[in-house]
Image (tube, rainbow, N blue to C red; front, side, top):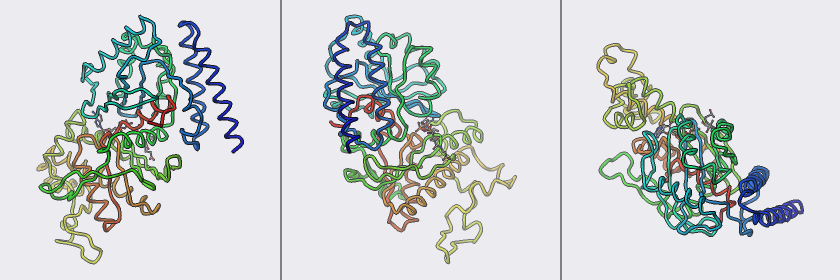
Length: 424
Ligand SMILES: Nc1ncnc2c1ncn2[C@@H]1O[C@H](COP(=O)(O)OP(=O)(O)OP(=O)(O)O)[C@@H](O)[C@H]1O
Ligand SMILES: CC(C)(CO)[C@@H](O)C(=O)NCCC(=O)O
């Protein structure tokens, strides 16, 4: 308690001092921002048990210079969240303002960047308040394999002239740290990926009333609909983050969570196997093929073994008994289509994740399971499978929930943590 109070007071005094120093001429602004960011970054990593609202920095009217970004650099995709203020922040020189305007124009007037960068305009959030400023959150993604091109673009757009520090999370915040420094003279303020994920989830759910939903009647295509779910009192809940790999977190409060499990059979596995088996070259193509296919031409079902249901242990005939279990037969292999193989890959990976999630939920005695991550992007087949599997195998005691901003929570969370912003 006393230590907490002391660190709050010391933190406050330090930041106050830094602010008075930041009245210094523009030439010093970059290095001051570095110091502030490094203080904030150290603070956040050592105070993971302290809610942001309580750490004292909230009261200090310090706004880092524009533009504000949060980056989540994952194993497959890099997610970039950009905050576009409704009004200019002020304090910038004429040349800085010009560069800020150019970056803003480039990011907000386009929805595609080069061949592989995309802005998810349907996810855009308007009139969001961050650190007292109203603005729009933009959601951009590109393959992490294109990082070199991104750094070149960032240099050409004059990023290095404006901000000396960008907040980043995900494994790439560590892996690419030196590249950012060397190529664009940008320092990364690094935040833990799961701290960021949770911060992002809490923030976005509070700002978007239609963020959380579940699928009703997931097995009936005619009746199946998305139904809004109120996540305002969510604890405890499980997060199943399906990225390249899968991490499962049990969340007990805003600041108390643990990573309870994971599996390497995730979204990266689905895409990798699908490319190998069908010759497809993108996630969108893989999902498109899966939508047209039938996994029953690939998998061995309970009915292929029992001739019907295995009643004694409640195993219905149409349950998959053995994923890819038909593919030992040359004759079957000759008949199977790319679409069937894509569908079977999707069903195999999804059911395995659902099964692990269910066991974790059972072990932790948690009923609400929130599935997120970009594996669920444009992927209603997987979401409905998860919804059905969770409900069916738990006899209705567990619920699969989904969030609209799927893979962007880490990026939002680290943007907010950098600005020490949790209050709206
Ligand atoms: N356009 C896309 N390109 C590549 N993968 C995509 C795309 N859209 C969706 N995906 C799926 O999303 C997965 C990556 O999800 P996400 O961005 O949440 O994880 P990540 O942060 O890259 O991975 P990790 O957290 O394991 O480091 C891919 O493995 C793939 O299954
Ligand atoms: C390595 C991370 C945490 C990177 O986000 C993720 O890809 C993951 O949780 N993979 C699964 C690792 C496991 O087997 O538990």
